[in-house]
Image (cartoon, rainbow, N blue to C red; front, side):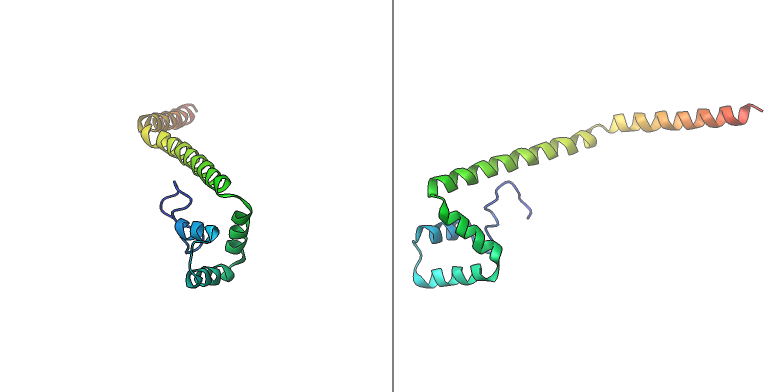
Length: 115
């Protein structure tokens, strides 16, 4: 999953958001319904997800998906900020390494300089 910003991009299994919505709204022909039901019968998780979506109305489903996408985007942004802090502070890391090397060098000089 290369793009996590939208949970519907991958759909459920191999189904797209449009196919799922059309299935839930009952706007598919018999062949398409059979094809989707065949895909759903392959895994219990996908079938349970569709069953759960059936219990919600369209407004609740759309609101839930929007809220999940917003939450997911916030989490991704937090992760990017955390990763960028480490990547952009190279001078800080260099200073820390330099201080550690100087401390080790000072210990070595003091340890071997004193009898």
